[in-house]
Image (cartoon, rainbow, N blue to C red; front, side, top):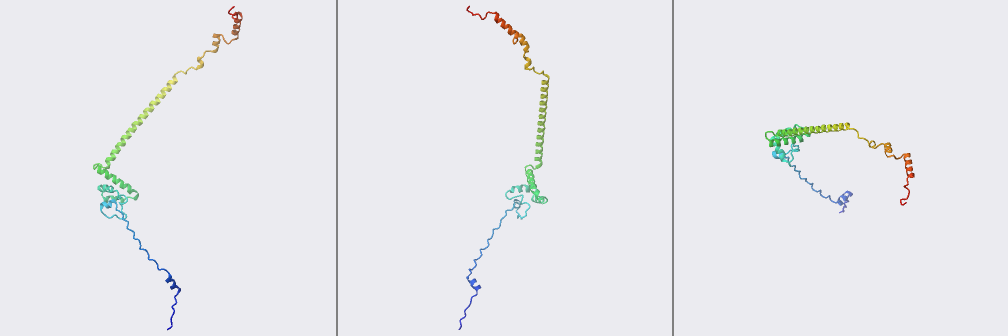
Length: 204
């Protein structure tokens, strides 16, 4: 029998020499993110939807906020009110609801109207006190103006003070009284000294 030689192709040689591919790692399974329901859904014991209208305004960390509003207005009225308002006004509406509900719980008869009346009373008292203070300031200003006018009037009526030069005597009167600073006086003095013997020695 004739032996047959099997010739291997270059492709088969490369495949036999190439290393076997490593197995792929198993895909990592991410744990599902558990989102806590909002305080409203937790109190109402219902599933909190993804687009819950109450979730942005009643976080789970502050359940008392929804409890107070729910006690006075009810969940359905709160949801209806928020749906009727634009997104830019909903936060202020929720704050107003919570404030009114808190006032109604503190004062079941008057509610927030009682707080408004008390604040209005304080405003009226402060306005009256301010008007009184302004009247006192005007009165003080008038007194000051009258005092300044009186002082100016008295200064205008008093005679002007005499100058220091007018108090001094005339130099001519001084010359006449004391007979000094004239040539005639000097001549008289010299003749007096010539006639007298005041220059004689005292021991003669």
